Amino acid sequence: MNYPDSVQFLYALGNENKTAKFGLERISAVLEALGAPHRAGRFVHVAGTNGKGSTCAMIESGLRAAGVRPGLFTSPHLLEPTERIRIQGRPISPRDFVSAFNRVHDAAEALLREGRIDLHTTYFETVTAMAFLVFAGQEIEITVLEVGLGGRLDATNVVHPALAVVTPVDFDHEAWLGKSLSSIAFEKAGILKPGAPAVFAAQRPEAARVLEARALELGVEVTYTSEWQVSGLELHPRGSRFHASRNGVTVAVDCPLAGEHQVQNALTAVAALARLGMPASAIEQGIAQASWPGRLERVSDDPEILLDGAHNPAGARALAAYLDRFYAGRPVWMIYGAMRDKAVAEMIGILFPRASHVIATAPGQARAVLPETIRELSGHPSIEVAPCLADALIRLHSLPPGAAVFITGSLFLVSEAKAALTRKAAIPVL
Image (cartoon, rainbow, N blue to C red; front, side, top):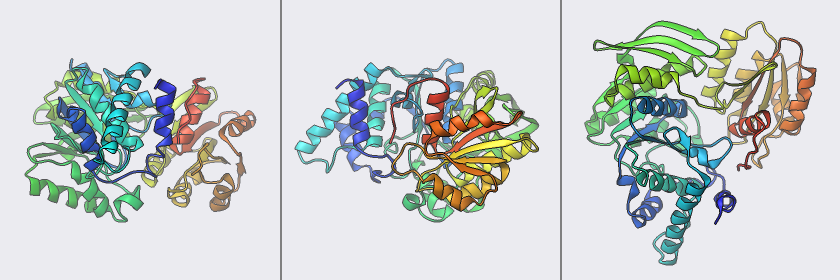
């Protein structure tokens, strides 16, 4: 297959969340047939609810600054599936993507014919296996591996990591992970392995108890971000600065990722990189050079337009805190779209009071909430409906002077906005 064909085949396998299959039997069988590429190299395995991607990006950037040749596997992508598999900070080429896809696809088909697996690997399982193949063939020293969903039965959880990292645990994907923080934390704690140290970000008490109990049971040595003392914290609209100190080591952090919540993510990256033995100078340089698109990403200064994939209540609270701190008293227009499997009423209850005007819209996805439903749920005094993002962007012609625009909600909407506003063609996602 060529690149477009491979991408379309992946999409035909179904939406990643909707077709998620908890269990490691299928992915394990395919990887063994491929020569066990998941056993090559070292891994930093990162789970959590919010901040996984940002933390992964900062850890990977810190490794590069230290002269390490790293790989990075994250999900979802914004514009192209190749973004999910990165080497030295760059997405792999379409040619390498196709090569890896064909090998995984052929292995899955052979196992199906032999009756050794029940179905073809899912979208996420396939891309995960592709990532392991690519990294094993590129002499990667350390791979930063982001969990897709949960942890315990996620397709990435076939590795025995050099380091496990757990970012803050909160509510999301309750249909798969459970209705309580303790049940969600139990799934996240599944990445912990005997003999592999861990870094835990600050957690809510219910989650902390579960993570700590599992670490104790497995004899895991844990570094807590709370062991690092933060001083001189300065927050600004485009990031933060602070000093992090522990055991006589001080790291001067200049984080280019916006939002107060990124302070904890940067601190988690500092703790992880230090645990891996990276020098303070490399940690400082790496974090300062990190980027993570689609999260409080500024794509225009005039008019001021920011993209933020606040797709769950924790993400909505983080965006609300950013608006309260830096945009209080300013007119804020919010373009919002969401998916049906999310806590939409809760999220708009958090976000819409911060907006002077709302344009309810929908990403081009079958699971999107109707804009009219968003309007009915909101009760906002100034809300209009746009059937699609393109129509919503046209409405910005009447933007009042000095107003800022936040395009938020679903990452699918953010992906469409990034493609439209940066004039890049995106392959549609499910």
